[in-house]
Image (tube, rainbow, N blue to C red):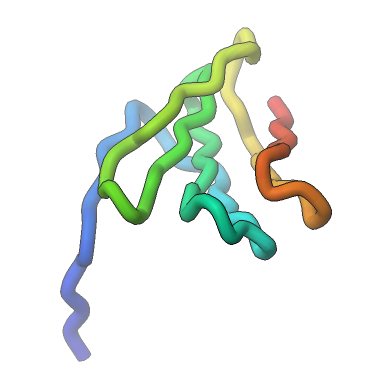
Length: 77
């Protein structure tokens, strides 16, 4: 079995977690938690890292989109 990657994204350090909103209708963003102190939002439609969310002082270990609001994402470090 062989797989063909549709897109590739570069992240500095280890990627610990990622999550895509299960209810989103207005965006196709994947939130990515990594060894970096920021969360990257990767836009599957444009193929780019569309936003960088700052606020942690160390690594971000988890991300989770709200099951009730497609524009709210929680992070944990």
